[in-house]
Image (cartoon, rainbow, N blue to C red; front, side, top):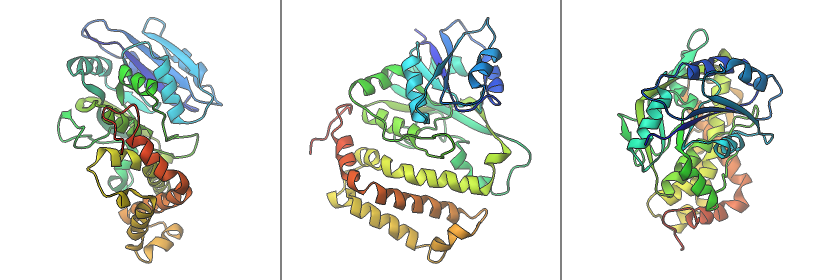
Length: 338
């Protein structure tokens, strides 16, 4: 049986971008009829997002619903979309993603063929306004574009995570996690704040619960990047967001990785290791805040490590508790009780 697909578009002030995103979904082709719906989660928008979404969707196509989520933050919007979804598969499409015309059918087929796959992703191609910056290849990974594996197949034990742009999930897997007590530790994007990591957290939690991750390069979308996001300062802010998120992903990575001595799991050891990483850059570390360093990958690494250090200092009291809670979480396939 081919499962139905609920496409969830999480939006914050997306009136300008939505028409093209919905047009790509309107153009879907099917080998045979399957369940298909579109859910627009209006996450605290102050523009005409809801109105534009309804006006842009043709009546004769699959149903479209607009739901309002007042709690600002991409993670809140994603989990609202999961709760609202009526079909077995939830496919997250960002408001700036234009999916290929076989997207829904391919996602449904893939999940039907691989019942232990909890999440799948594809090949995200960049689409630009104007000329591509000379430094883009240095920072391209920050924009969730490119291939997510060397070839099609299981990436659970290699890459280990998938981007949120175009992430398709088995609803039963997420529902079981939530029922067993899983609560996201990351708020992800929140308005104009470039927080990150919610997609990686979901993938890590699925892996700990025993599910697999899959990459299919024929699942293709174009990720539209406006000129406003193609500035070096924006790229640096993105990397700082990854640094902050890494602190809250540590407990998952420790649980997924090989067992290490307790001292290396401690807040003190992790903080010292991050500080050591920063100090290896010498004079560049303190001066990077006041210099552009455009195109220099060291600037991105410094921003990420510096943001991680600040977040470690902020999370000092709760860090050890978070590590223990994930290690002993009731939603894990195998609990660690020591």
